[in-house]
Length: 195
Image 1 (cartoon, rainbow, N blue to C red):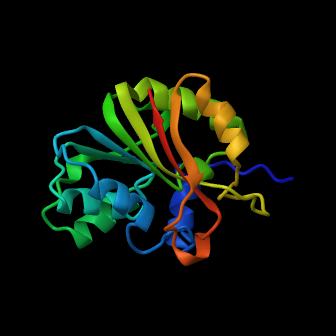
Image 2 (tube, rainbow, N blue to C red):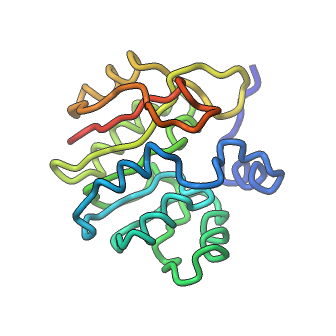
Image 3 (tube, helix red, strand yellow):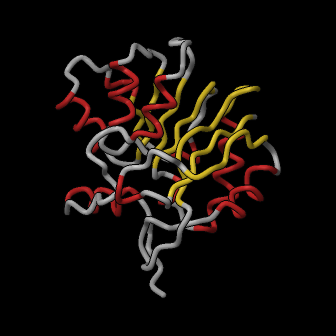
């Protein structure tokens, strides 16, 4: 099996070659529905793997101001600048998630976890725990299926997630997403995990 170096250069090449096949073209229903239930617009929110910026756009349009997106590539900043002219681009951090420092009430997950090789998943869970304030939550979707191939996305399953996250946090919700987009229907779990 070929080892893939998932660095900044790799992700920029995927974007530039139009191989961002995880891009739904808009915020997906599970995250939109969750965000629509949030009443406190002042909470500190981190969006993982900002990508094309759909979650950032939506949060900004809904009046959330304390939002930060993190991504390896500048694709997120370019896409956001193009689509949301008044978005504060200083809210997009270009860098490595595992080196990011901050404290958040909410971390949103949408296809970031599945971009990580299995060997980094324990480190991901530990980093999420470290970035969340006490009582803070990780919310979003995780794949409940496996994928063929040596490159992301990588799959997973409910049992793996239960074991991974229950070690240091409380799983509030871990269930099949009822409102996934058609290509992901039956293959996503909606999660809310609390520190």
